[in-house]
Amino acid sequence: MEYYSLIKNALISAIICIGFASNLVLADDATEEMKIAKSEEVYSVPDDHGKGKQGKFYSENNESILEDGRLFLQVNIASYHPDEDRDDDFNEFNPGVGLEYHLDGYYFAGGFFENSIDKFSTYWGVGHERTIGADWFGLGILGGVVTGYDGGFSPRLAAVPYILLKNGRTSLKTYYVPAVGDVDADAIGFALRFDMGGLF
Image (cartoon, rainbow, N blue to C red):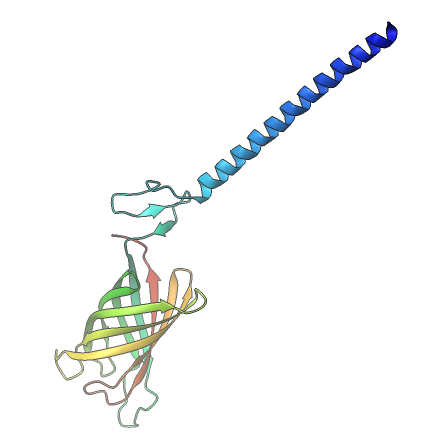
């Protein structure tokens, strides 16, 4: 009788332990599923998540992950004329300001600066830009119209290729400027560009 009671108690204890262990496993599985669901919720972007009136999308930390377009401010600094003749004495301090609106690799640009013959110049055109390899390096070209190189307004066609070195929202543009109008020497120009974000 004592032997029978001992077996009965052992069986009951085993059933209770198995039930308790099963509950722990189920609870563990439920917790894991919740973690996976939470992870997918954080790293995926539903169709309507963060969508604003202008069609932009933002992650939880308000960083833009998809933009309709981006606006850049360019500040012209200086130029260098490697083939400059002694009699030319070109101006190589060329302050100016421009704007670029980028969309899918292409952009529209316009601005003004003091040119190499100390005249006021304006420019406007369309450009194309590509990041090459790493995010910090890019190549681009801007083609359009520039004024102020013939003693007056006198618009002239020009194509300006450039190298872009990026650091966060700031970039250094080093561009090649072919001889134009009264400037009979090619030049290398330098400008800083600042990413103003998606403003439209």
